[in-house]
Image 1 (cartoon, one colour):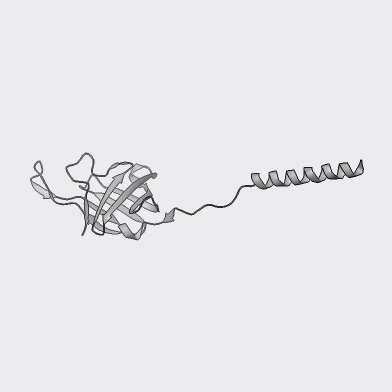
Image 2 (image 1 turned 120 degrees about the horizontal axis):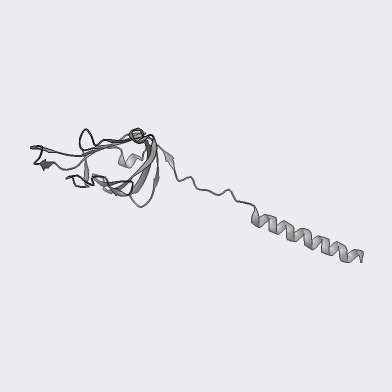
Length: 143
């Protein structure tokens, strides 16, 4: 009888140990968000000039990315500036950059950038073309 109880106690202890091993959370998390902006998209990028008939001259949109700030503008009133940026790589040559937009009360917004080659990229603001609603193409070239 004593032998039987000790075997049952041993089996119970082993089974509880294995269940505890399976339920323990593992601390394996890849750090995919990085501080700042990726080096691949930093710099001054512009679209091709577009003639704006209502203004009477040609103009272009600009995309500037520095170490902790991303700016986009095609006129004085259409300026998007994300501060305190952090990013992650989302594809082969695609990056998502998050940052706070002070004009919008400091809420977090994202700009997704698809780099087509070393001198050409496309940008998207919160999932839509960054030049949506304007006459400018969504193609930026390194200046």
